[in-house]
Amino acid sequence: MYKSCKYCGRIHKAESVCHAKPIRKRIRKEDDRARRFRDTYAWQKKRAEIQGRDHYLCKVCLSEGRITYEALEVHHIDPLSERFNLRLTNENLISLCEAHHKDAENGTISRALLIDLAKQDIPPLPHSRR
Image 1 (cartoon, rainbow, N blue to C red):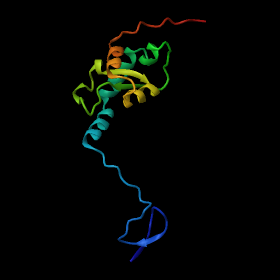
Image 2: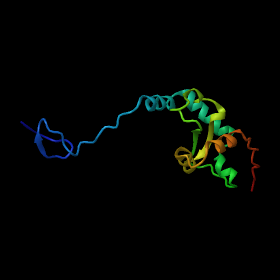
Image 3: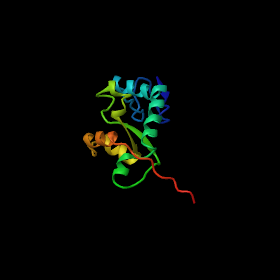
Image 4: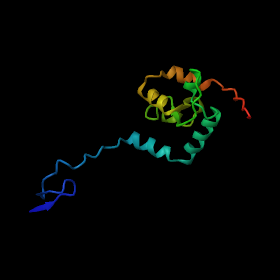
């Protein structure tokens, strides 16, 4: 028996698997737990708190003398997959721009530096009125 394939539009034997069928990536249990955590109200509230603590600025850019406030994300210094119990701990969270967040995830920026930056208080920036 043959049937029409919804992936490539051709006709195949019913028992065959089409080469165009996408392969489902199996989600590990830890990944699923982290994904579900990021949807919680507690995380949304904590993320806003951390961004406010960091004055809505990337702390790595600030340490390099630049001010970046666009595409701001909150990064877990010790990843959720390793230390899930630190998921809402202020010392484990830091505001980073999108580029530095990718660098931190890849290990280009050391955890020790991120921990030091997370501990540093940022003085409020003066607002100029023109």
